[in-house]
Length: 252
Image 1 (cartoon, rainbow, N blue to C red):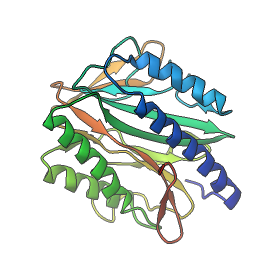
Image 2: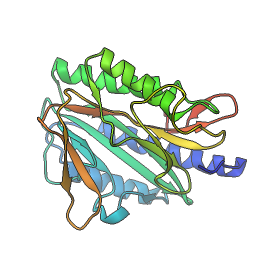
Image 3: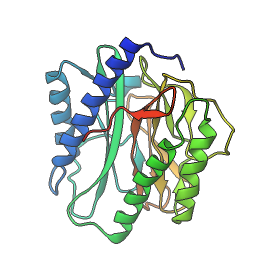
């Protein structure tokens, strides 16, 4: 976790705003009948048209430009021929590389009218992300973030994914520290001013063990809930400032 200088922060802002704009655009295209492959192709063309690169494409062999995780898929879902159906929820995770800097963000979207269960877990996941972000400040700890996230999830009757979480980001895609969705206050790695992290809690309906699946020709795995119950996720890239934080991927 290396602090950024002022010029690098400006470059991070550009990459993150680009990612936020792309995510907002893709979210507007989510509807019944659209395939995740179509969303991926649109993302690829859009990123290249903005003189940037899709970070997931080719990353440890990952075959696509975005991740699309539908219903019970927790993360790293691979776009393909699957058509979105009424009642689905889909997390779209995008990362743009602009001038050597990475902007990373995701949201979970409704496909048409969804169940109350789907609405509630999605709302909880978003609120958990912001609860975690509220803890981001200089010299706070990753445990502070994880504790806040887990407390809210458990209060709502949900379960956080522990083995996968946020990370440092900047001139590399995934950097230290690991940012968990559970923890104890004051424990973990201390946050340094002028560094960036992602806060990205993954919230499951049940405590069923998660299942890991191989992606052909890649060392990246994708994950599902063990009982095929729903999972939802939101993510922002956050800059730690000298007084608090700034959400770099937030779009008005």
